[in-house]
Image 1 (cartoon, rainbow, N blue to C red):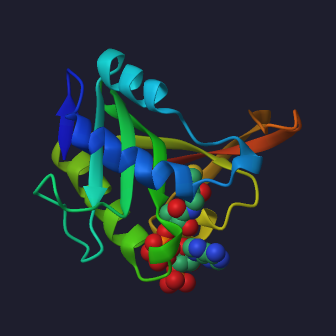
Image 2 (cartoon, rainbow, N blue to C red):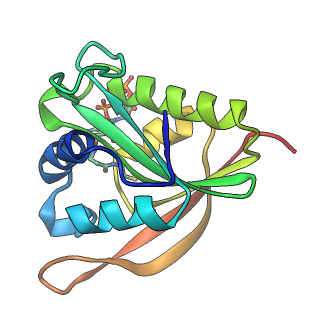
Length: 162
Ligand SMILES: CC(C)(COP(=O)(O)OP(=O)(O)OC[C@H]1O[C@@H](n2cnc3c(N)ncnc32)[C@H](O)[C@@H]1OP(=O)(O)O)[C@@H](O)C(=O)NCCC(=O)NCCS
């Protein structure tokens, strides 16, 4: 886990963006560009995590990442802003492994709740449900796809401590 009061090294941004551009279907308008990621890291108590194809966090700048998360802390709550595994490495448990790590780190840091927004009908729903997330709301037209159409988001919450 890397908590970023400043920008991550360029090689980590490169690794995040290499997954980003492949993981999110452009038609849903969910992917962030490099500036959005680096601005979030500069402004907002964000942290990120990377996962390699062996399920471990890549520790050498030369090791590829096949997945990442980006989350923002607000006092004792956290929002999971982005979560993705490269399409060539899906359905092997890496999403579960990365989410487990992200949640373990949040618990260890004393976070009480995790929030996220998910595109309606995203198969990621099953992953989040398996970790205890539940739907708490609907944001109509939250995502804007490149063709201008709007897609609803489901807000989800995981309570870590009452
Ligand atoms: C969602 C995502 C991170 C899952 O990554 P993954 O490495 O394939 O996840 P896992 O192999 O650990 O599988 C996790 C569970 O998610 C569900 N799941 C993932 N992809 C699925 C799909 N295409 N269809 C149905 N269920 C799916 C399954 O329940 C799966 O568990 P199972 O394989 O035991 O049935 C990946 O598909 C992804 O990056 N999607 C695009 C980005 C995205 O939408 N991120 C979430 C934004 S909120």
